[in-house]
Length: 202
Image (tube, rainbow, N blue to C red; front, side, top):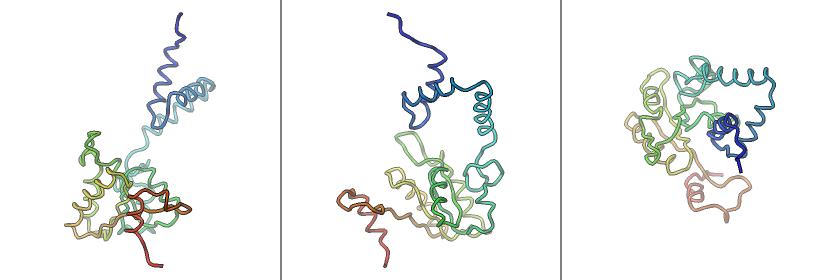
C-alpha cells in the first residue's frame, strides 16, 4: 500500500522540527497553521523572519541582540555601568529584567563551554567581556557570574573568573537555592549546598 506523503509539507515540517523544544507533532501543527494562512499572511510571516534575520545583530558592547549599534540597556545612562552581569543567553537578560531589581548592565556569552558539544572558550563572547574590563571609562568594579547552575555553566563561570581575578575586578556568583514555596525534602543535594552557601543574614 502506498504511503501518503507530500514532499513540500515534509520539508516545512522538518524546518519547524529543527527549532529547540519543537517535537514532530508540534512541528506538524505549525506547518498546518502556515498552510492555513492567506497569501498576505504568508508574506507577512516570511517578511518578519527575513527582517529579524537581517536587522538584528549583536550589541557592540554587551553582545545582546539589538537593531542599533548599541542595545537600549547599554545606551541607558541611568544604568550602573560599573557592574556587569554575565549570562549565557539573551533570554536570561529578559528574565532578569522582569524582576525590576537589577539596574546595572549585562554581557551575553551566547553559550557555555561544553567540550562534549565541541564548544570552547573561543566560540563564546569572552574576549569582548575582557575588552570591557580593560576600559577605564567606565571602570568595572564587579562582574556577576549568572550562568546556569549546570556542570557547563559552573565550568564557564570558573573559567571566566580565573581570567578576571588578575585584572583586579571583584567576581561574584549569582546565588542559587530553594525556590519560594519549595520543600527542603524535594531539593537535591546540589541545590541545598548552594542554598547554604548563598545564605544571608536576617
